Length: 48
Image (tube, rainbow, N blue to C red; front, side, top):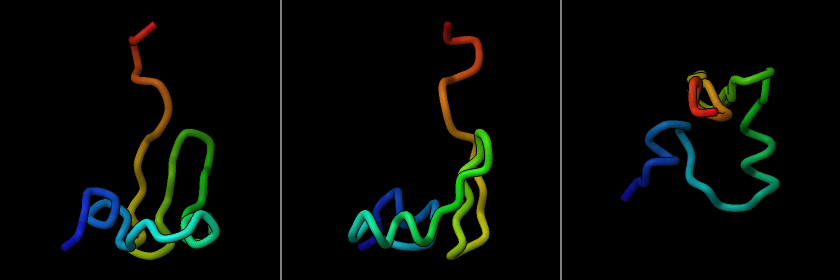
């Protein structure tokens, strides 16, 4: 059964080293090298 992490990023959360190897941060975007999906990350805009 897959969880939200696997559904979004294309791989399960197993070890910190594996997660770091399969993700790339570019400014405020996180990119999955596994399924080529990217998401905006950081504080919600207008939340200050």
